[in-house]
Image (cartoon, rainbow, N blue to C red; front, side, top):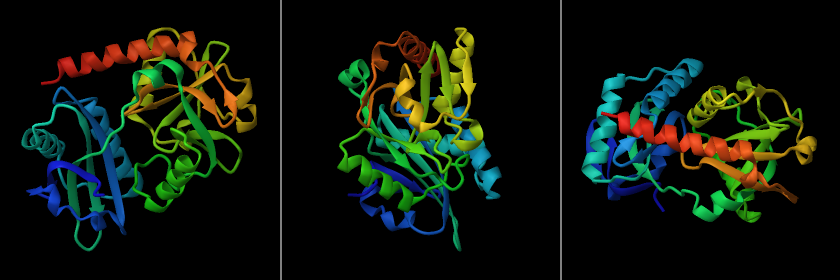
Amino acid sequence: MSECVNKYFIFNNEERSCEQFDDNLLKGGKSLYEVIRIIDGKPLFLQRHLERLKNSAKLTDLNIWFSEDDLKNKIYELVRINDTKIGNIKIIFKFGETNIFLAYFVKHHYPNEDEYRNGVKTILYHGERENPNAKIINLSFREAVNKEIEEKNAYEAILVNKKGNITEGSKSNIFMIKNGKVLTAPLIDVLPGVTRGVVIELCSKIGLQVLEKNVDYMSIKDLDGLFISGTSTKILPIGRVDDIKFNSASNKVVLELMKKYDEISKEDIGNFS
């Protein structure tokens, strides 16, 4: 099944039918990308995503050849030609003998009410991305983690690095709750997720202490709760890590952050023009 869904995608400066999409374009070379959520036909936290894309380019010494306004216009155009109000858009800059830009809708899975109400199952996965601060496509790593997630019927995999510390989710960031404090891995070890940044700002606004520190995976059983943050998931409670159960969905800190995140999301979309 093609990664490109909906009717049309953008190839460099051309609009093309999704029937023409070639998934082989995603293989080989080096690619920077972003996945942006569309709500009511508007991109959520667009400016934050564009800033992260520029940071990824800086970290990898790769040159993005479109201006910020060019990128915004291509996103608006993609939404318009597909006449789509809800979904996830992926933008890719692929570097090689011929540089390629792609923008298209991808299949999305948003958690249902039951998953938000009870939390989701996760697993521990001992592995780490080569350059965690940059959003780079790594198909082999993605395939290996996805295989483990599927085999164990989990929602997400929590990555553990060589030192035995919890870093991030395979496609998300991870936050932990202990004694009313919010813990998360140091920024140097993880992708600077857009939702992660929003969560940390919200904690500051409502007076919650955030500690960016290493947490050994062996101590996970001592936590009061955990949650996932990400473009599709928003703030999603974790109900289980391997065989360890948590009441994260009933944790006061998690519930407060979920409420505040929904509020700031609505505000961002409402202020978009």
